[in-house]
Length: 264
Image (cartoon, rainbow, N blue to C red; front, side, top):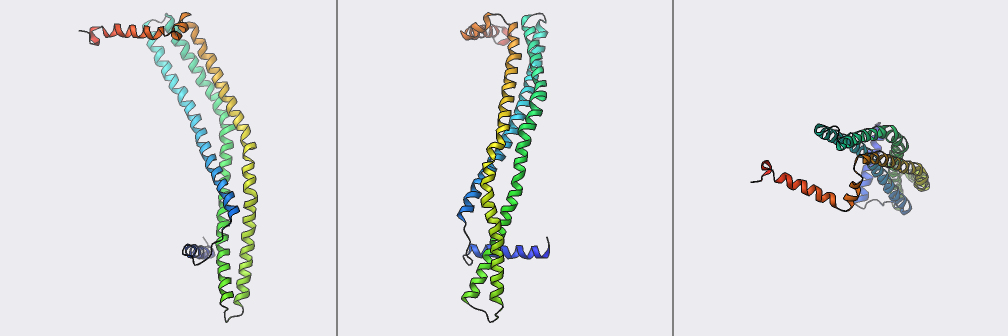
């Protein structure tokens, strides 16, 4: 920071302190405050959306990876009992289906999702630091304007013996006001425009996300549905009728009757 910048920083800190103690009047711009509040809400929502979108992508990868480990275990479990059984063939078919889905995540979901969803979100969130810098600059110029106005009012209320002080203070006041007004009006005008553009900006990403989710769900249904042909035709009906639960309970009871499982 330059010496001039350092002095301005000290002066602005003093102005802020005097405003807090009521010694200098603080300019309140309700119009700007309203637009800034809406912008801050938008910024917070975009950051939350980016975090949630990344969480979704990570969850999808974690789900397919976990599903793959589950399929490996089931395949080994059934193959160890009887490789030629229908259950073993179903387990192997399930493993193939899960492996295909895991490959499809990278080929048909991960890369397109990054391009159409994550990258646009990242670009939008990259704009906020630039806008925030303009808001901070505006706030600093407002402090300069308030300080210059306070100085001018003091000289008007209590004239100095030096006749050059009042014209100089008036010039400093006018210059500070002009600089502040330009930044303030720019932000009041353009912040709403930025918010208005959010819908057309995010529409393609939203549509792409829905289409990719649908495609993944359809492929999952198709591939996993193919595993069902290894089960007996009556399995689905038995499940709907609650008979599979009774079958599981029956097998569990047989296990409990074994001596090693606690039967006396």
